[in-house]
Each structure stands twice: as C-alpha cells, then as structure tokens.
Image (cartoon, rainbow, N blue to C red; front, side, top):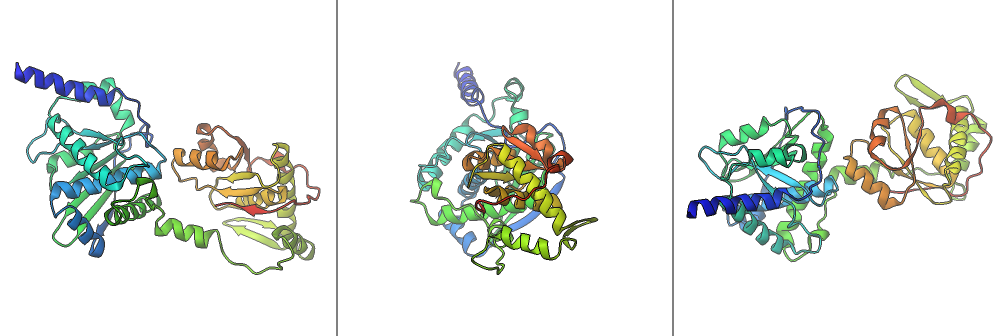
Length: 391
C-alpha cells in the first residue's frame, strides 16, 4: 500500500508541473539535433567564488550553475515561464531520458540567496519523484515540443544519460558542466538552427549572471546585470562611432550637402551592389514619405530589422528624414526578444527586407519591405523634423 501511495504521490507531483502552460524557448519543428560544440571554462576569481558559495560540493555547484542558466535563458529569450530538461540524479542506469525543472523560482523581486535556497528545495523534491515513468505524461502534455534547453553535470549525472539527452530531436541547446580541481569546463552543444554568435552572447550573459549572483546574494534577481562584453561592444562601438561634423547641422543636412557636391559618387558599396549619393537620397526621401503615411510622427520609434546591406542604409536615412528615431534589431535575436524590443519601444512600424520577411509572421506590427521596388516611386525632397536613434 505504501508503494502504491508513493507512486500516486509522484504522479500528482508531475501532473501538477506538466498541466501548466509553458512558453516555447526555441521552435523545435526543424528536428535538427545538437551537432555543434562551443567550449569555454570558468577559472580564477569566479571559480573560487562559486566553490566558496557551494562549499565545493558537486550538487550545490550544480544548483548555482543551474540557477544562473535559468536566469540567462529567461533573459536572452525574454521568457518568464519555461521548462529546462536534465538527466536523473543518479550514477546508475536511468528509467527516464530526462526530468524537468521549471522557472517558477526565478522571480524578479526575489533575493538571490532566497532563490538559491528555493532551487535547492525544489530540486530535492524533484529527485524524490524522478523515478516515476514520465514518457506517457510527456506525450500527453506535448513536452517534446516545449522543452528545447537542457543542463547536465558530469560529476552528478550518468554519462549515458547525458549522451541520450544530446540525441533528443527536441534538444537545441545543452549546457554540460564538468567541475575540476582548478576550473569548471563548460561544453555548449547546439543545433543548426542556432548561430555561433548567439551562443557566444549566451555564454557572455551566463558569465555575467554567475558573477553577479555569487557576489550579490542580498540583491534581487531583477538587478542581475546580463549585458556581456559582446553586446556591450556592439552598443558602444557598433552603434556609437564618433564622427565629427558641424554641430549646427543635422546628419541629414550634412548628407544632402554632399549629395549636391558629389551626386554620382558611390556612397555605399556592399558585395556586388553600389549606390550613389543621389540614388540613396532619392530612395530615402521616398521611404520617409512612406513612413509618414503609416502615421509615424516626430520622435516616434521605427524598428529596423535586417543584416548589413544597402537597404539598411536607406532605412536609417529614411527614418531620420521622417523625423522619427530608429531602433536597430538584430535578426538573429529570438522572436520573443524581438517582440519585447518592439513592445517596449512602442514602435508600430518595422523596416525589413526579404531576408527577414519570414520573421514578420510572428510579429504583430506594420512592416515595410525595403526590397520592394514600389516604395521608391516618389523622390521629392523631404524636410526632416528631427533625427535620432534609439538603443
């Protein structure tokens, strides 16, 4: 009877978790397995702080690393309620390919030390119920469609279980942790649908989060700094190059003076394509007029989502000539993060090109495709009201 009650208790535990609604972190419909590897390691002061906080205990180290992973994934993909997969906590054969932990403890107003304590309690509960057969519950609750991120640690998990997780079709990112005497090695396995630069940003953010939580136990989760060196460099250098021009003139005025001086000179060359000052001026004028037709007013924000191209320059100049501010959005960002940037900026118009057209299906916003020739029909001079950009 006691055995039956224990089974029923475990069943209820998992049903309570799996009957909730969770966000999809990464779409898993492409079925590409993790086949790429990015290696990094934690050494020096950060390693020592993690060891001190975790008392060099394998499980406590895992809890710290897992908590930081949840915060990182949540921030990068702009998700609050999601599931993370992991192997069972055993060094013998497992009966479930993976078990699950959710993000319910990661609340913005919670203190970091309280989150770590609650994660420990939550994980101990999870381990009590980890041997309940979960396959049918996973199928019933579409778990394979909703879980795409995993975390495992060689020091506490069965090596076969770790390899089994890497083979899952719904697995898109797996963080493998290996605690050694003087460093923690991190292997990030990822699928074709994710770019290496995205993994580098996630790695960068993860290090920032780890550093913050082991150094600021009494601060709130919402205070955690997540901008890493790659994104910081992009913001400070990529979008803020210092160019000297007359202070009494706007960028557009300086540009149009150059149009008058050298109309047929190439202003942008990208791959095999070239555009002259005159052509860029005419196309940006047409675009500015089109932007205003969408009701964009002075100092409103217009998103620009495309990779480097001549059209991107047309977009920037067109937005400035319309009097609006532009918000650069990296197309490689997760859809949830793009949605957040658009909503947070209160933008109601997005400039795209053919390469980013597919992303528009997931966004509820007006778009102008700069690869469409019909937007460049008019080219009368536009008088700019004010120019700005937003980051």
